[in-house]
Image (cartoon, rainbow, N blue to C red; front, side):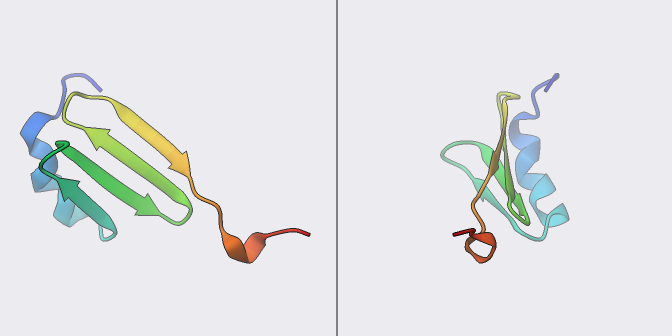
Length: 58
C-alpha cells in the first residue's frame, strides 16, 4: 500500500465491526467470514483464509 498508512490504522478500527488494532505491531486485523486481512503500518497487507469446521468433508 502506498503511501504507508502508519498511525491512521488506529482511527480506521471503528469502521470495521470485527477488527483489532495492535499498538505493538502497528497493525489492523479485520475478519470477515473466513477471511482475515492484516494491514500493517508499513503498508504491507496480508490476507489469510481460516478453516470453517462446519464445512468439513469426510
